[in-house]
Length: 224
Image 1 (tube, rainbow, N blue to C red):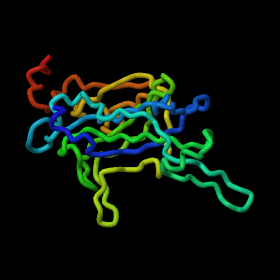
Image 2: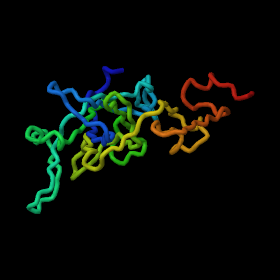
Image 3: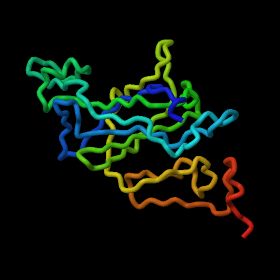
Image 4: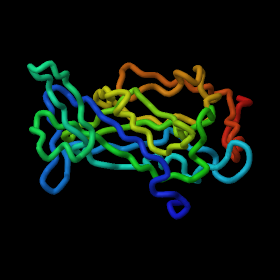
C-alpha cells in the first residue's frame, strides 16, 4: 500500500493551545515535548470505479506524525504605539525569548493521489488531528477536508490552518473508528461518530441494516 502513496501529497500546518500548566519546548536536538498525528477518519473504497480510489486497509488511518517546532515569534505591544503582532517564520526564532516563541506542527501526509480532491468537492475525506502533549493524549473537535484550495488562480496542496485559528485541545477519553457506511447507525451522519474528547458518548447500531460495502452481506443475518 505504501509504495503507491505520495509522501507529501498534502500538508496541513496547525497551531495548538496547550493546557495551562504545560509549556511547549524543543530540545537542542530539535525534539519537542509535543508530537501530533494527522488521521483520515475513513478512506474511499479500494480499487476503481464510483466511490473508489482508497486504500485496501482503510482502518490504517494515520498518515503523518510530526513534532512541534518554532515557527515564529510573538512581538509584544510597545509604548511607542506599536501593536502586538506575530512574526511568522523560523528566522524570527533565534532572537526570540522563550516565552514568546510560537510553535507549529506541519503534517505532510502520505496519500494516494485519488484521495486528494479539488476545491468544492463534497466527497472530500475528513482529516482530524491528535496530539501527545507531555505524555498525555489530546484531541480537537476541529477537522479539515482533504481538498486543494485555489487562490488567485493557483492550486495549493498546503493549508496554513494556523493563520485562521488556534486548535483547542482536550484530553482524549476513548478511541473509536466509525464505519464508512453510516446507514448501519441509527443516527444522522453529522452526529454518528462521537467526539473522542467528550463523555458521555453513544453509538447506536441498527442491527437490521446490512452494510452496502462489498462482501459484507454474507456476514449478516437479518431474518431473525
